[in-house]
Image (cartoon, rainbow, N blue to C red; front, side, top):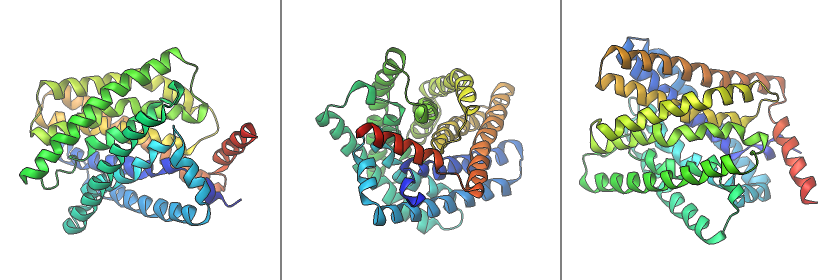
Length: 330
């Protein structure tokens, strides 16, 4: 079968992760005087990745609609459709210096799509009664998406939009904290997740990194609560890093590793923003360390993806996983 049939919806995480790294390098240019062209090159890759993946997924929808429907209805994979509107919320930050009108339009589409999808997915959880083992880190993505709505700061001076920010940040935090307890309990007390889902553990960083960004964009400053969010995000990086490094050493490389990129980038961006607001030696060193870690981690995922794409076996693990699932269903 055509490999496009196995293009996973979570691959949109590439646009998210690269957009986050672009934002981080723009902040690093201000904080450390690093060359700005690095950020702009990464931003170009983010836009290109989104366009290519979107074209591929439209082709999948046209030629393999049953596989798209299966992803949409899957209790673990379905929430990852929120990666599309999240990408549309992050790309405006990349585009705004070059095309502010297009950036504003894309943000409106992303914000509307994200609000609708978050509402839909919460309703689906309440009505379909999923099993506890379905509560994986992928469930965070739709509520993290709500926290991303203020990230670009679009129309923040419009009172109605500011109230919308408050609504989405409030909903995002409430459900992020609920889901963190639920997913953490599932990870501790239930059998380990399947190997293809191991990279999704990185999403546990996202409620804190993205929460910091959305919260500070909404209130306009960094307060004690924001500081605690960043501290928790850094703690999750320390806890998860050894687990993720060990998993990354085990073949094969899977496209699900793109799940690592945006959560990591969100903590990097939060660290840099904190250092800009509180310019002391400690915050500078933390921001520099996180920038190095984020660049290395996202760079590894990008290199591995391009290498396997050039080798022609990028989708082999996805095809094998799908074949195993179909065999079990028979």
